[in-house]
Image (tube, rainbow, N blue to C red; front, side):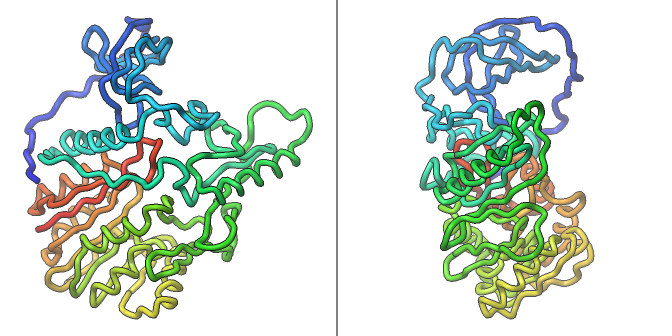
Length: 415
């Protein structure tokens, strides 16, 4: 993969709000944006973002918001339906904020994610990807999610509405594994029985509830924040991982094995690996079997407790698990030994400020394995690495969240 730096940069227009210049206009939808909206062009050439449209649609839209360089609209009429359209299966699709792409066929979703990632790398990181980005699809378009969080308040259970903090009450969710959906239905029924009669108006959220399907037994639900205990266990290869309430873990239960194998394979084998954002040890245990020494860093105390328990269960004693901020670890690390590998799985915000630059200063680091859930922050961080003396040697997508625009990417860089 090669990279070309664009000097200068496009000027960003300042927002200009006002009356819509095109209150109703027909547009052709050409592609999908990172946030999930369809992308077309107004007659004057400006980009317009239109939710719940598909590439190939021709739609009559109402322009709701105009700025100097783009606009936003909503569909008034589907004039010509694209062949890429699919029939949504959820009764609250369009209202619930969870899914944005149930109206688009699965192959088109995958192609759009590859395009979104490539465009982010080019626009933000000035990295041009010459070859098509491969996508590992979810084995199922629905019924894939083993964990979720819902809100409870005023006798209702559900997710947030689209672009709102209001609650969208649900009793079923087709992306959940059946045991998790069954538990959601039970919660909804119980909450409805407790709802005060004649209660109307805005819903006040009282609790966040974590639902999860363990490797065996019925799905569980826990109100957050919750005291210690009530952990679920996930089967990943030869390991059974303890994951406590509120601790992050990958939620596509059908791709856990593939994802872990890909990260471990990309890391390779060696003497030392630094794992940042280690969580409960989803990748750590496999890394410990491939490297003589592992330094696993995680800032969540409960996650580190899970990690330490999982290491004991697996009989692994070559891991130093530290509960501290990753930027502090990276800034103060001294020698790591030759040919050190770094594996990182940061949150959506990417690496903390300065962390990427501190990593490239460690000349011992020869390989970086970066698992990302946000193309924009991935592109920002990769731009720093490639601007130093790292080369992007592998890039792929794992579609952990079908029916949504979320992109999970695995990037490998070599010094």
